Image (cartoon, rainbow, N blue to C red):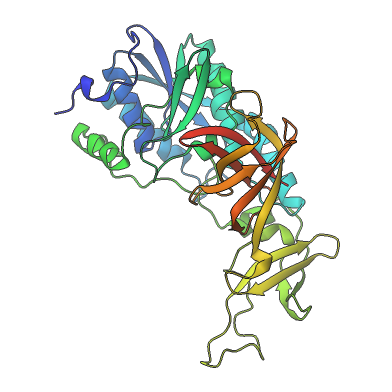
Length: 376
């Protein structure tokens, strides 16, 4: 049986402390709400509606998610309310998302969504409800050291989401709990099944933060003009037409429409595998290269801007580890001298694959997430 003592988040007295939990209708936030209630917190659920365009389409599941969240709240025994942050999302996240794509970069809306919506608009609303803390179903940890708060990786490194949370600051972390930080995903599913939660076997959501799983090119087409142009090899040979540079990202190999190019067949009759390697915005040209390890796809250094350090100040130059995309192993790097709150440079021991402008470079010291910036 599940017992309160099995899942102590911290040692402080939790009785009568009010926690507002972001409940999305998914299993992670649902189990988070239960864990907090078991530990004696006064728990209030909050369901965020942050997208209204075409919300009746097959790709937006807001109504079903709300029904799931409300059903879970009933089982767990907590009150829940819905709040609409669609205007804030459009102004603070989506406008930036479109601006970045228009400039040929590939933004990560989940990073901005966490900083601007889940831990700003949501946090402000929770505080207005008299909350002491907010909590989410993210896989990460917060550690209080002296007068500072550290953001740590989750113990389940396969689910760790600190990469998406690296822009959180001291004020935000001081009010944040991550109940799943020390629990494996398999255990979260087991708890949900044992509790009989109605969403215990619900699939994890993917796709753009709050916008859902939809055909990406079709979605962007509604908001960005289509400007077709040439696809060239490194030698300058035209091998196809692209639909608009905004619709492609570095390292992409699917959806290029240049499969069997005459004169490029291998001796065994198979065609080459092409990867997007460069975008030339001035000439509206997309460059592709053959092979995963082509030099154009490898970078030994990067520069980052729009920097956010968790502690509020830049670490000293030296050896750290970094991720340049979410689903990758930490890579040993040097934080170069001269970096500050405006920008920083990284030099890697091993060349990094498809370092993509617009994505986040996130710096780590062991399990501690130090912060990061947008790859320039």
